[in-house]
Image (cartoon, rainbow, N blue to C red; front, side, top):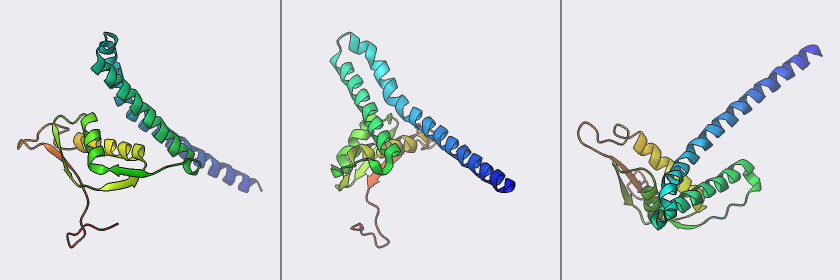
Length: 169
């Protein structure tokens, strides 16, 4: 009986350790994701206080983005208890919009699609932001043209099948 209790306690301790590691990783990811729009809001806030409507719009956009992230976070943490309502989203339009709001001055976006996808828009926006940021960050010398003068190029489009045709799925 004693050995069973010790084994069960060790198993429980290991499980708690894994849960704590996952929570720490999640908290780190969340902080990373929220810093960008928060920094944007802070940068434009001083100018917005002087009555600059463009700056006020940038602050509003950044705060809206934080609110969207919170919504996504709640869906992620609540799992099956959350209601996700997919809707048709023009992939090219959303990709262009996201690209304009991600720090991509030293990279290029090529959109090669006219797909309309049925998704939860906030989730797709979050996915594209992460993909674009990571692509640019880990592209040619971290956003700068490489030694040959090439810039990072991110392409958005459908993947073809082995025959070159786009799969209907």
